[in-house]
Image (cartoon, rainbow, N blue to C red; front, side, top):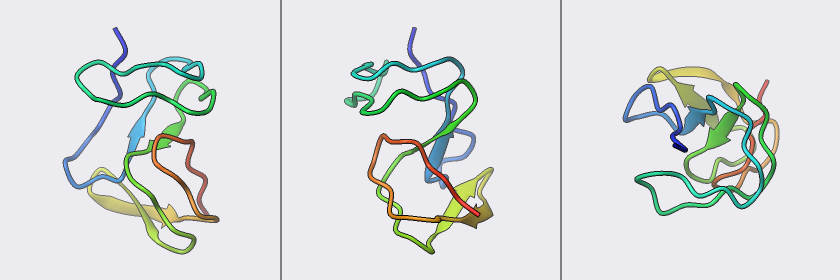
Length: 77
């Protein structure tokens, strides 16, 4: 079972409930992971540009520190 935790429909990141290997297909979504993603890390649900808000819980939790592509890990400050 490969499910991401999406806390709110307005979020632009999801949380990984397990270690994700590259090329993992996610249940109920037509996506495949690109990078290895550690347990508990965020994964971008859509492209996020440097300086754009990172939204989780329908709240801004930071701003992207670089450009992020969909289905990759997300870093922010």
